[in-house]
Image (cartoon, rainbow, N blue to C red):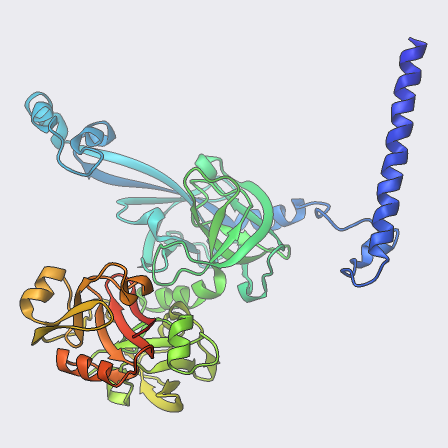
Length: 493
């Protein structure tokens, strides 16, 4: 026993010495100069700031403003058990359908009531509630349950599927509902503490805490993706509930999770939601600004091709005839770099900026055209997502070149074969294996629009442009590629 204790004590002493040596080594390394400056608490006796002492006061103050939302949707088809067998995993009609219709025909036609759960928060004394559109979409009945267990029917004031937001109003004569304050999501920083309150899995008034993991996340849910990512626990039922800063202000609306993901949730920034909420409250719908252009981001090759110092800006791929941009003089291949003095760095940012400009109001757009800055005044119209560019067809003959490409004019037959709608340029119908074009990444179906800044309308234009390039000279092909947009491919002749 004594030997065992002595050996244990010796190991403990050795560990202490080793730890001291490590700390001493760190101190020497840290004091050698040129290292990172330690935070203030690291050089004093103050304990490092970690977790706030308590979230209880915040929960008590804001909790009464958070509501539980229960909806009922009427579906046909015998409920989830039958629907599970009606289609195979590929989405095709299941071969078992005939069997079910024969034996359960009447049952499969019956209506099925599907309940769902969500959360929301009260924004004014009259009982307006903000939630997600997907929480109440197609609902036949909406019930709102308050913190004090009182339950009310609610009516839909307006919905906006594009941002997944909805505004409800509690059906009550009361005008003294508890109200939460809306904050400023632009002030959020990665690493900042946030709190989520909602009803995950129907567990009402659940409070979870975490930090802002990232900002500006794009998760493919729509054209206005700009999510706050957080590790505050968010689960089904949290949708529509508030994400709060430590002042108890709403900085986001909890909206999405990643399937099978742990510790990852997404919230709509409250600054994006404010304008939507205001429009829903005043008119029941959302109108957004529209320029009338097809756009894409500027990559490094395109920036070099157009002589732009950085790859920031938005490339105008097409201009819809008769729409605001066309009327103002904007042209395809212009690069939009500013809107009303605010620099534009991506298509998503431009879409969001223009959407926020009131319909009928004029906006100043700064563009780069052929390397020179130009400014245009555009009168914004109402966005119509169904707008498409009308394009014609230009028949031409085939041709080939020294780059290892075989090209053709865009005949209607070729356009149909490749399922494309581009009207001008020449299409690549063959890429010779091992050629300069093959090594540069050219593909069959690529449409060549320019050669070294020279516009290509026909096979002859293309051939003439290549003739101007000396042997081993640089060739910059400005192309359009299906599902990728406009690209610049560099190669040598």
